[in-house]
Amino acid sequence: MLTHPVQFGLAPMEGVTDFPARIWFNQTGQPDFLWTPFLRITDTFPGRAIPQLYYPEIRGGGSVRVIPQVMATNAVDFVRAAELIFNENEASASKVNRLWVDLNCGCPSPVVVGGRAGSALLQHPDAMGALLDEVVTRLGSGRVSVKIRTGFFSADEFPGILRTLLGQKLAQVAVHGRTRPDRYLGRARHDLIQVAAETLAGIPVVGSGDICDMVTASGAMVAATGASSWIIGRGALRNPWIFRELRTGNSVTIPVQAITAAVQTFAWLHELYWNDGSRLLRLWSDGVFEGCAGTDPDQWHRLVERISVRGAVPGRRACARTKMIWNYFRSSLPQGMRDGQVLRATNLEDLVGAIEGLARDLQQTEFKAIYDPSWDWVYNGGGRPGANAVPNLGGLT
Ligand SMILES: Cc1cc2nc3c(=O)[nH]c(=O)nc-3n(C[C@H](O)[C@H](O)[C@H](O)COP(=O)(O)O)c2cc1C
Image (cartoon, rainbow, N blue to C red; front, side):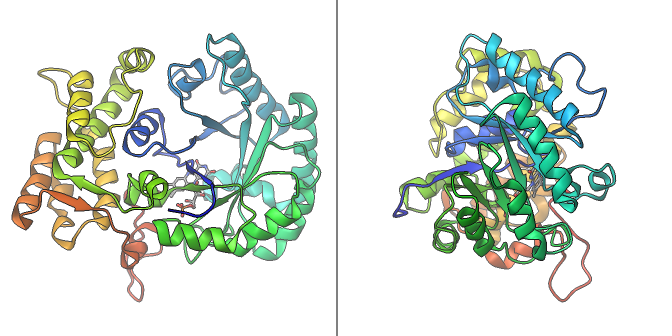
């Protein structure tokens, strides 16, 4: 058990932490809070309303706390999107208390930076300060947060970035302890997260980077004692039950039947999200996803029963997303479970059959999810150490 009470949330991940994945992570391990991926705002998008499936949690129907994140280049666009979110919250029967909107100041993608958004905002701290002055003035104190990296070119810029944030009435500042050129390589600088916590006295600082199990979580918390909470991104993909592990202090043992039913649930949630959003929303507001299936195969099977469509199968897109999650998760399983045959499956039935087959060959009916650092290179976009390997973020960039 971790010695002091710190909250652990699911980090925002574009192409991953959409609504169905947020439902799913609540079922595996109930993070203390979750984060949407960024919604890219332009002068014409969104028009009159935030897309319905982007952030349904705002209309109630669940007990989870979700932070919405917006990517914008200027104050006008950010304020317009935030007001749409706030108005929707005001109009909903069960309002979310203490709602604020997060500004993405960390995305390293060349396309995003080329559009002067994401980490590009860090390049000119004075302009970023002016943008924040304006949005906080218009939206109010505590209604805006930011998620940053430690620099656009290098971490030497970090003190200047913090000076800009100091004194702003922000709900919180999340720090991914890497610069833009670092992308996802190397080790996150937890010491700089501590510097942020010390400098930004009065603003809660959220730490981000490289938490993959109890040991890495403890290390991060020792290095940055001032962080009020931490978020977990790739570590949660590699062990979707990690939030349970951190809460209980024990590594989690997962029956194969729970693993396969969780995989089916993941596929069906995404199938509904892409092809029958209104049914997904109905199931959500009917409370079908309340609670946490955890490692209980029966609860997972009941979920599959409720959400699957008799006589139908999830399509290619849902299967591809499911293979992505398996590609991460397999790194925490024994070598025999990592075989690539699961990733070659072309439909959900074959995918689940392949997982069952590997478990049968190993004569195991349950597995512990154990973090294996020797697989980090697969998920950091840098390729195999010492080899000229193709970067691989498990299908993600
Ligand atoms: C696939 C992927 C997508 C991401 N998308 C976002 C995003 O939409 N917004 C954001 O602020 N950070 C995003 N991040 C950064 C993460 O939130 C997190 O700060 C970073 O991955 C470091 O944490 P980790 O080591 O726990 O993964 C993304 C990271 C990954 C791997």
